[in-house]
Image (cartoon, rainbow, N blue to C red; front, side):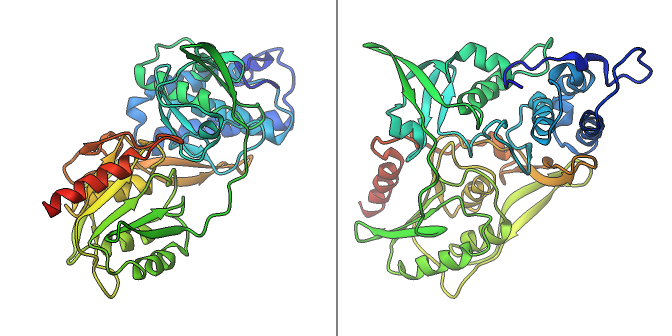
Length: 405
């Protein structure tokens, strides 16, 4: 089954009472039953359902038209993934994937588009290694025009798509699918150039957290996609203890694309707090708003100015830490808009296939009331510059210099 524009003879199979319909295979029965269950689950639990109602209900009604023949487990998952495209929400995700699955944004992507223009390139990613640059104009991805690839991710068909959905589809198309070789064709002054974005297994990290003393006074701490790891707090403590003499601090969250736990985030924030502080608003769909509080943490408090670096690969709990440092007034945030993964998620298990799916069930907000996924750093600077100069890091250093004048 192809990955683009899947259509098939299942067009009438969801409708009860239909006459002269071929018998469903067990895999089809399971998939259609889970689609109905998922449609109801989103209506009941998804905190942003009111903003997606028309598209979601249309997709649920047209679900059989959106998929091809379903005979194996990977095809079951792919059909349900196509259905969730109608939510155009990168924080909705299944707990598993297959070779046919789309790469998730931002964790599975390595460059970011605004229209056709590249506005961010992940440091150390395949795009950076292939030579993709911020400012490049993209005309095709994976051998398909960007326009056609984007259209293939727009679900359901037959509805009007807004700018937010089109932006999601464009970046989802750029990320591609696990079983499709990735290329990107760009238009440059000397003509078109096609770059191959070969997948490479992640290299070995020194650990969940790394650190260094920069310029003799700046304690630099970088998290490596580890805000949900149980050993991150201990690693953070160890790094901090090597940097006790720092007068300034940089918390680099540009490699935290998804996941995380407050059991990790709160000790990190708490290390920089001398007293308890409110850091994030929680907004359940069916209960009053309440506020998260971070307590001081550790046997010593890190004093001095704090710069927090964020970019398009700062997601979920990384975003929570960024708004927390800003909301408590304990850190200044430098960078671009983040991944904008909306809300906090809960996990549900579909009864027929057993696939788990994570859905945002409550909204999150900065202490000033701005939704977390709509908040922008107060110090805008290019954060993800591929293999180019680290402009965000330099901006933070320049900011520290202002305290010594």
